[in-house]
Image (cartoon, rainbow, N blue to C red; front, side, top):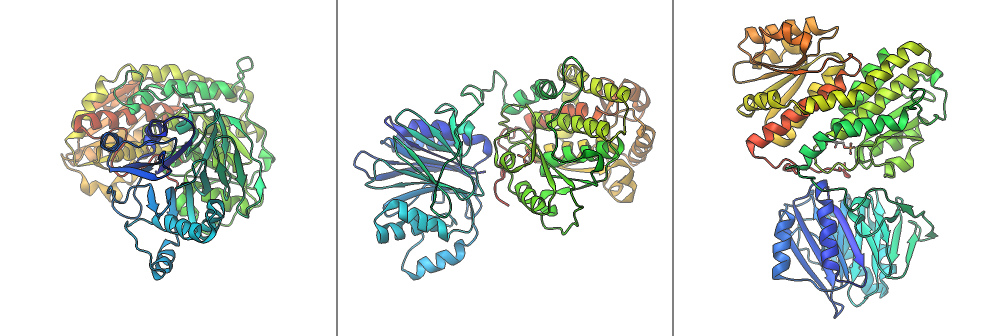
Length: 608
Ligand code: F6R
């Protein structure tokens, strides 16, 4: 989703902003631009549709000088991803960049047009530049103009603004979309996240919703929505400037797939005592033994991790679980139990729908527990308890290692809640924990034998539609497989519980529709075999992820098999997620699609 950045300093700002935009690329975008205040105190802009390479070429034609600059990567919401719709937007003596959606833009536009103002783009953001210009003319004071502008906006925004003739001023604001300030020596920075700011500064302040800030080269002032001066803490960011290279891999996704073992291992290391081998999570501000229910919510892959968690929490911790995707749960009127627990899962901690549910469940007195990769994100700051995963920066738009890190935390939470609720004894706890601890080495094993995945990928790459089947706690892994395939290869894929096949989707099956089965030899394996026989009998081509024992039974049915290390049923969803994601990657290579930045997608979805 859009990324913004700003620089006010003493060196040429364009290369700094351009580098920050490169670091925001992972969020997904379809055009980009930069505006600077040149040495004559005039605003000049350069914008380009498409990738940053286009902007780089445009900058060669139109170099931008000056030590104050703002930059933007745009993920189109209102208006096509053209150069003309690209940010920064300039009106009169102001230029702005905006991440978010201005929900009342239509009425503002009407009002501004009635004042004789002429709009040149199809974006919602242009109203911000017009308002700012209007109020600047009236007030002759950028700070007052910014304050009045913010008061008129409804919706979500992170903003950076520069003003002609003001050569020591950069103003930022946030409401519903993240924005951070970075501190330097005689220079200050704005960025959508600490990753963008990493080479520039590791001293970071995260603005709170409604905050806006006035940056000069020497100082930062922060105000709340009512214009009162406020103090916000300065934190040291943990992402290093060197942490987003591809390390010799062809794509970030390939690199991140190979980081699964480290992500799982580091996540577990943080919460498992090496001596007692007992899981220690932050103490919850409620009594887990008397928890009436858990509500699990998230979006996309993170939601599928939550669905695996539902199977675990119900069967191991004997807890009733309600689950739904955040965009639906947010608008359902679910009666919440007194003192219930909400479990929210998010890599970025900024996903608008998940954040929306967090706030509404908090208002309904639910205890908010979040599983996050970016712990200092908005969700992190608004949760009662944060359970951090240690996956490191995930740059590829398609989530990979964050998914298995999320599952590792949910597994640890399940064991902890089961212990506290007395649904497992010490022996069972030790067994479950040791299955988790064995995982990283088993995943290394999977990643060093990818030939059979490549062979399966060749079959899938020829297909137009693919069916993924799973059962029990591996059903969400089928959903993850289908999502990943759709996302990065543009092949249509559906996931179904294998038992549901005969209630509808079996009519789709013929030789052209491969059936991918997530089939570890567990308690539901016999039923899965029957379901696959039904598909085979209709001419279906069966591609199975299974283990040694499963392979001997599937030999007669399966056209292709990926044989995985044998693991306990508890951790099978985590292990099986890895080759299923890898399959999508291999198919994408064969199809030649843009693996790291698939069309139309954004990494961090900060609008509803
Ligand atoms: C899928 C994917 C998305 C995210 C979803 C939630 O590969 O990346 O489905 O899982 O947008 O994002 P976070 O976890 O940041 O809340």
